[in-house]
View 1 (cartoon, one colour):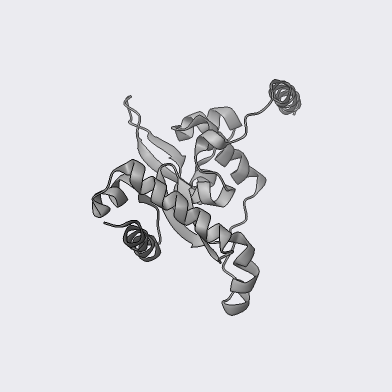
View 2 (cartoon, helix red, strand yellow; view 1 turned 90 degrees about the horizontal axis):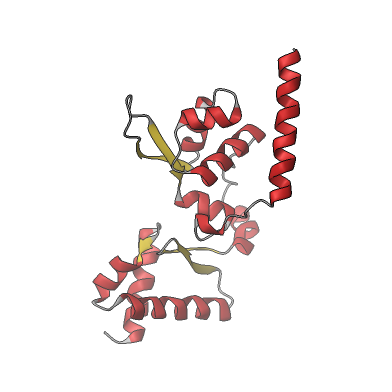
Length: 189
């Protein structure tokens, strides 16, 4: 298949699917190797950017998705009702960060870190499609394991969890000190 034809097929698939499609599946459909398919996709991404189009192709952990550029959001809300935006409270953000950095993680592990029940927060994050059940731990009781979703990656503008910022050692020490102070206050009450 010629390159232009392959690009048209990729564009049609990504537009129609609406979700990310793994590179391997695209290569299989095109009957091309993954390296050649990735080259075509990267060229398409560059072309979309060069032409200053309203859409883009993004990579999410080895899969590709077509989506609207963030700069177009204000125009989209003029044409459609503003979508319901989920508000991430401090509790949800704290729980989400634990899941993102510790995944796969059980609810019990989250609660041990937070020091409080986290069932509601985990359920809300699942409802918002930022977190999902990714399996069960092979121990008695077989607790659920949670991890982040592609929606999490899209929402936070990262291609993979490896791109999440790593806290500096001094920040970790400061957090530890704050947690110890908070624990002392709770023990006095």
